[in-house]
View 1 (spheres, rainbow, N blue to C red):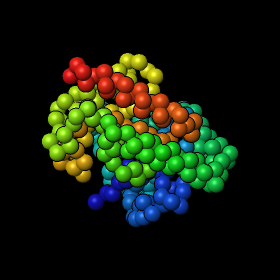
View 2 (view 1 turned 120 degrees about the vertical axis):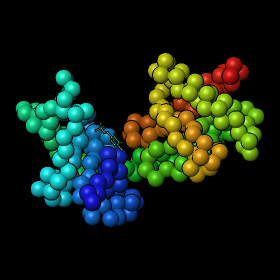
View 3 (view 1 turned 180 degrees about the vertical axis):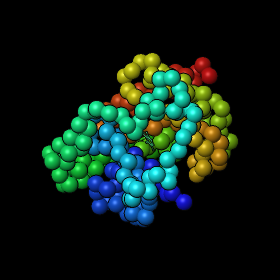
View 4 (view 1 turned 45 degrees about the horizontal axis):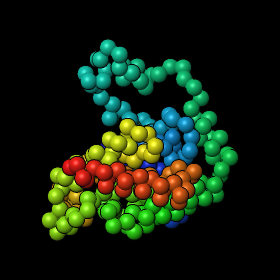
Length: 229
Ligand SMILES: *Cc1c(COP(=O)(O)O)cnc(C)c1O
């Protein structure tokens, strides 16, 4: 069986000794995708597919109506894209400028940023953190005043968090990502589908003042919304 690792973000575990243990066993995989444009501070797009035995790729080639037959689908021509820009120049120049030590230092700062943010969430009684960050993502919910943690009103909590996200998009002052996920660790309600917000600690320009301001902003919107929902 072909074993593939989607390491789009996971690539950053290779930058620092603190995280390399998470990559144990990856050498046994047949292919790995990595996204330097996400984790190496270089412009979109720079993705790579690393293949242990390139010749074996033939075994997983396939034909799909969905991608190949649409009138304007790029899938008709990839991987034979033809002339394109010198994409590999971006990671090469990045590595040359920063070196391994530079990447390790970049990750050290990101982990500090992530831990700082997680600490600010934990210190805020209106916010509930849903994950223990393994890399740089912190997932959290706003809880309306008076939430009974033993019997939470999940529907209302989701509605308010979706409302917060919509305001974030409308106002464009800060950005947090939102998605749905089952509460598989039971931090709020075991297996309920939640709509939390997600912070990413990768941007080296993020300061503690930014994080405090962004969380105050979320709290302010949450308080406004809980009076109407
Ligand atoms: C971002 C991401 C993708 C898509 O990668 P792009 O090259 O940015 O389109 C796929 N898988 C995972 C896990 C990702 O985080």
